[in-house]
Image (cartoon, rainbow, N blue to C red; front, top):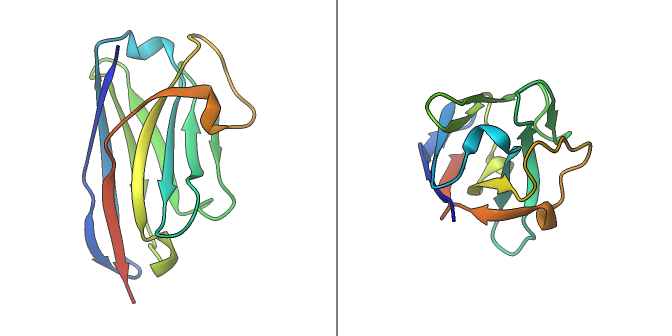
Length: 127
C-alpha cells in the first residue's frame, strides 16, 4: 500500500501564493497518475488538477486554470501544486491522490479512479 503525505497548506491573504507538496512511499510512484482534489466545508470533494505518470498530460479544473500549476518529480516521489492568485473560494482541505491503475492516462479525473489518498492539508484564503 502507498502512503501519501501532504504539506504546505496554511493561511494566506487573497492574491497570495502557496505551494503544496505530496510525498509518496510504498508503491512505484512514477507509474501512476496523480491528482489534487479539494473539499470545502459542506461541499463535495472536487477535482483540482491532475498529472499523468509521465508528466506529459496535465488537466485543471476550470476554476483554477491559469492560477494553479501541477508538477511532479519522480526522482523524489513527490507531486506539487503551485497556487497563485489565491481567492477566498479556494479555501478548502486539499488532498493528493494516486490513481489505482499504473500507466493509465486520464481525460477526466473521477474520485473513483484513485484508491490512495493523503490526510489532507488545510488552505485558508482570507479576503
